[in-house]
Image (tube, rainbow over all chains, first blue to last red):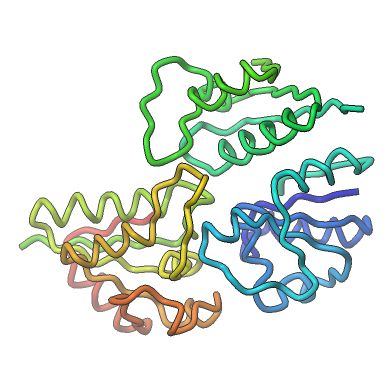
Length: 93
Length: 76
Length: 117
């Protein structure tokens, strides 16, 4: 299962997406303003410890250079592969 | 073998980043041989109006026209 | 001279607010209005250096923010928001001034009009 999060960490939508992914043991892909979740420990703070990925283009667009803890940068190609491989894709939050 | 992906777009073309995300995901999926459906609902239908003049942001008409040529199936 | 405060609360690119704020700031300053652009909450991400728009088709808002500065727009960023949102001093576009709550309140008070994005 894959949860896609496009909303920033300070929004109810962004938080809801992370909590849902945690409850469903789903992987997370961060894009648009969701990429700000890579800063600090925003995912860990919401209790999420599973695999998380961030869309490289959206991260670069915002001038973010740091890699999040255990968060791998991916391309649109990889995102599409994840979507095609997942039995369920939920989002975008 | 290619899969079928259905994307849902409900926001107006120039107020959110969703237009760019949808274009780039659909483009990448079509390149990989997947079948891509796009359902445009609510303000999402404005992405398909003719005569859009947007610059400095994803031009919805231009990009979706290109993707339709590539095989994107759009349902309004 | 008329004075206007423009408050940006949203991060750039996810929606149109940041682009609109800098666009209207440039428009106002070109029309001889004194503009204070105030970044608060997620809006402070606009002040982040190194925004790379390659391949997106978007206008680079870091460059537009610099244009604002050069045209005479005063750009302020809320100190607490900078800390909360992790935009550190070395990572900020030059010319963006950190301001505390009471300084921001004084700027808004001194302006004739306030626009919120």
